[in-house]
Image (cartoon, rainbow, N blue to C red; front, side, top):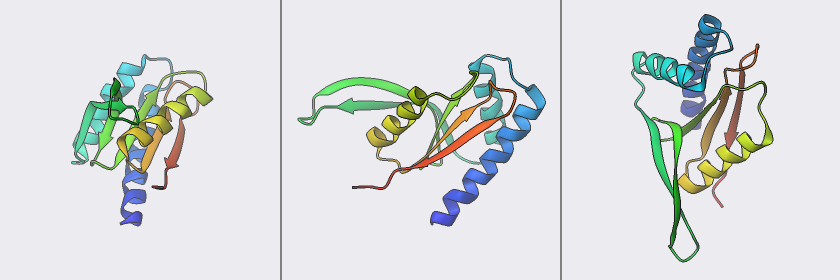
Length: 126
């Protein structure tokens, strides 16, 4: 099963690389999000765009909602950025998404730099 998630990540990395090679950097995040959705759809991988996640306090009180860019195959969160370089805030955002959703694997992808940046994260359940 673990090898399967790495195969999925490899396929997504290839799609991201091809998209970045085609568009280069300099577009808005939404353009890259639309392009990646198009390419993932052609791969026949199930995904949900702008998947809602709720944040709860220890006692079950709803603290707020936020949306992750992609939930892919119900086991991989993808966060898209279009910035000069990946910052620690973006890493914290993805790690927070993983914790809240209890999903183990995530990709942080930056299309905004001259070289495509992809970072893979995995949280081990406690």
